[in-house]
Image (cartoon, rainbow, N blue to C red; front, side, top):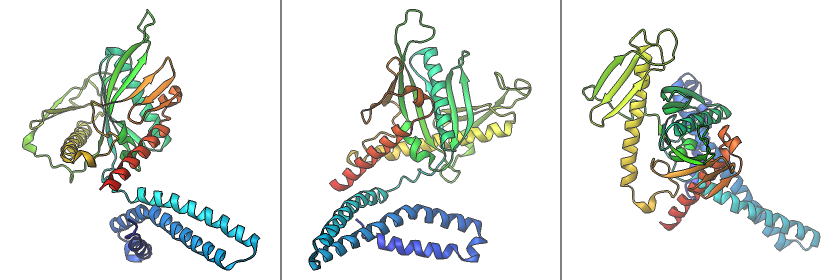
Length: 357
């Protein structure tokens, strides 16, 4: 499995040499491309270099044990041998994970769509809370969020909200959030104190570039209209809102968050491209053999993935049977522990699949 790592070391050295050349520095596009390749290879090179050093330390310790007669030196060599063997095991696991095929979408920005489901107003209120949870999480990772479209229920909730998150490795972490999120609590409108269960659906879509999805103008109908709701002086006075209808799929996109019709149109097309790209990804994934698919769902919107139980202060991640009793911090965007556990489970499942092949 590690056969090609020496070749990667050579490639890494070539990259470092190329990046020093004046011609490269004067070509921003080429410089960015080489820097991206270098940063992708760096963790592998670092781990493999340490792995080789640990293997050499094992050989040195074994040689010392054969040659050395002094008991104190032999004990030292045994200790060194034990530590080196332990480190080699850890690095072998790390290298296997680093060598797993990378999701080509991991570095993409994302579109997140949250829809209220069962539970009426309570569901819409929870949709707004989950939206804020993701915004806080994005801020903690220094990612940028941008509202694309939303539909309010009049009491502070969202029937639907679509927003973009951009930054380094956004999709690689957020892709696990797609699915049905369930909330259990006593709604503010409930006078009898009974616990209600409501649901929302989250869809995380990698942002599609124009090269990823080609949209034929003949397939699109564009309507412009006056925006509705609160939005400043320009709302309700100019035809700034844009609605796109994609005939082949029936997808309808509505955008009104900007004062400019041009900006709303651009946002609507970005969302449409991501939706069409997601449809294409779903086709590819369903065509894959079941045995090769990861055990951790990353896209099925109908899959119940998480329960937020407020009376118990509990968040349960059903896919990996993880329960945390810190619902307040989770709702404030502290979801790294959940995502890290999902990533670890996903990697373990992929490694198991590779070992079976």
